[in-house]
Image (cartoon, rainbow, N blue to C red; front, side, top):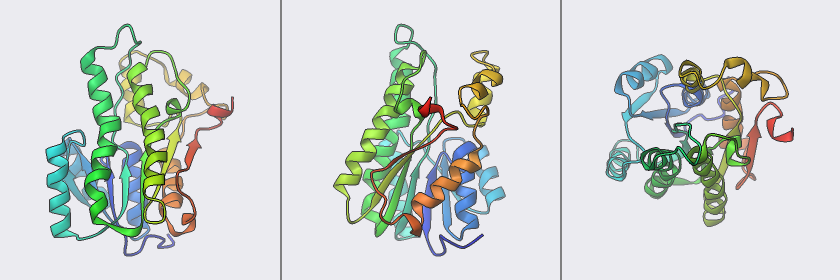
Length: 244
C-alpha cells in the first residue's frame, strides 16, 4: 500500500462487516488509525481484531450514545480527519405494507444516523477533513418494495449536498451510491426468500454484484489527498446500473 492516509484518524460506522469492514481495512492498510462502530459487540470485536483497529459499540440512531462517543473520542484521540457514515439497514416493504416501526427504524439508522454523527463530530474534525456518506443507487432511482429504504437513501444524497455547501472550504463531504454489493445484507435478503443471487447479479449491466473492496477503493480516493477539490459529489459505483 502507498500510505495515502498516514497519520490520519478515521471513524467508520457499520464497520464490523460488508462495505464498512472493507473501508476500515483499506484505510488501516493505508496508514490511518481507524475506529469502527457497530451495534453488535461480538461482530465488532472480531472485526477489530482482524483489521487491527480500534472499536466502539454504538447505535448511530441514538443521540445520547453518539454524544457519549464524541466525548470519549475527544478525550482519547483529540482530532478527527475522516468520518465514514456507512451504517445502514434494509427492511423491504411496499408503501402499503411498510409499518411505522419499519419506517422509523430505516429513517433513524440510515438518515438520522449520518446527521447525528456529523453534527456531533464536526467540532472535533481538523480543517481539511473529509466526511463520506454511503447511500445507494436507490437514493437516485427507486425500486419496488422498499419505500422506506429508498426514502432514507434519497435523504442521504441531498443531506450530502447540503453539508458540502455548509462546510465548503473547511470539510469536504461526498457520497458513494453503490448498486448491489455482495455483503451480509445480500445474504439476509436471499435467505429470507425475497430474491435470488442470480437476480441481484443481473440488475447490473456488468452482470455481477459489486465487491466490498471496490467500494473501499472509491472511498479511499474520496477521503484521500487526491480528491482535495472534490466536495458535494454523488458518485455511483454500480456496474452500470444507473446508466441502464
